[in-house]
Length: 121
Image 1: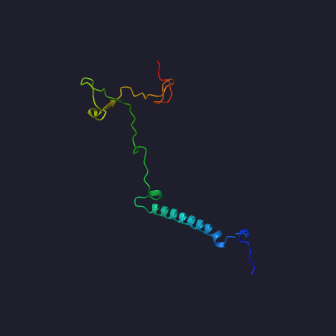
Image 2: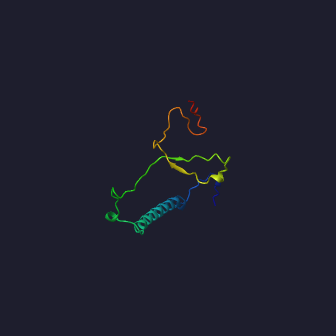
Image 3: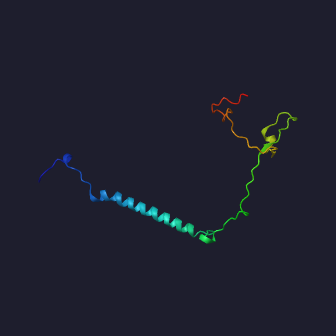
């Protein structure tokens, strides 16, 4: 009987060890493809879904109406002394007399802590 040095033997992985990750990866990819196809199919069959020509269309006169207006807060009453936040409730507001939207201007500061010098004039 011939005895060999085990430390110098080259290790050759079996075929199962080499093929198992490939088969596992292919199975995972196939499972993901199957899940996506089933979810697309279920979404198409969902109640309330429309197919092609039967989907509703919005005409120009039926479309949503966008209203933009500038609002300004009402003045805080100063005749009662100091007010606590719970005494104010919701901040009432009213339509502004001028509908000009305030924009950022050069020389004005940014947000708190942004490093701007602020408005000096």
